[in-house]
Length: 375
Image (cartoon, rainbow, N blue to C red; front, side, top):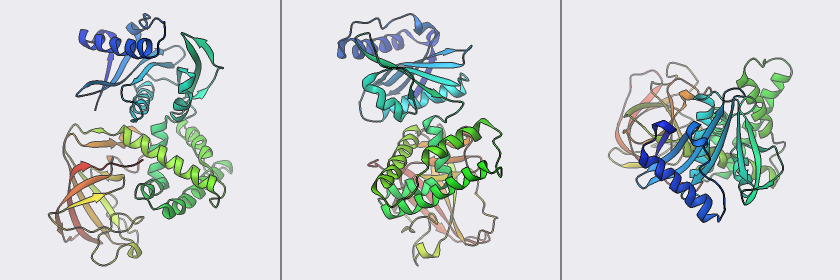
């Protein structure tokens, strides 16, 4: 799936035709509305779409007002519904609005029936519904000065304790989900307390956004069904944001992962992949399914530190075109060159000993394919 971003003047004739055909097919023919789709704004808008082998898979346009630093997203279409394409294209638009245009606020003039969808993308209603162009519409806004876009918020939580919540959910271990949630939500409250008593200072826009995100995630007790349901809902949304944002790598990667060993989770004959999960079976020349979102980096990570346990080093070859999410574009990442990969099937190429201090062995893997998930 390729992301394409073009100004009006950069469009080819065929691209413009395909865009206008798709918009008229959806907004006029399918929705049976009498309205003017070609309104003159396309000449000053960024045209954004996801493209696959069949053509445009999802589309929108972005209008930007430099004076107010406000972007307006419009004409949002997902060709295949309920596949995550709508959220993916909106997430991409928020990133473009922030990084390429410098927007501080993003607006959308949404049909009322799509209000819930945009709320899941981080927008809040700022007007009452009004009948326009044959259907009820309302204005919704996302303040990029005070709030993270959904993807950046999800990445911020993943790179803290929430990765263990999300990955426990992926492997279906709900006891671990709630256990790690207790740890994570306790830490969240602790961070807020430190800001409140002056141990931490609010010095950047990131601090303000992080505080607002932490407040949204606060949960008191995890011993009732509503609280547990919210934990799972947050984790599912974060996973959807992260997985849908992964895109084909433009080059081959050689990546590293330091897997510290938790003796209680690593019985004899198995190999630790993370202190937070059960160890896995590995055999040279076979494939292994890794059912979690995995964090790797372009250089070995913290191997020289004494953290009180031994570790395995994983070396993963990721062919060009494989789905990845490079985290250097976000302020929240654990180290430079951090890369997230989806649940994946890997070939075990070799398992060897190591002369590195505290390193129990080096495991070389090759990415073969992405695993399907039920999230």
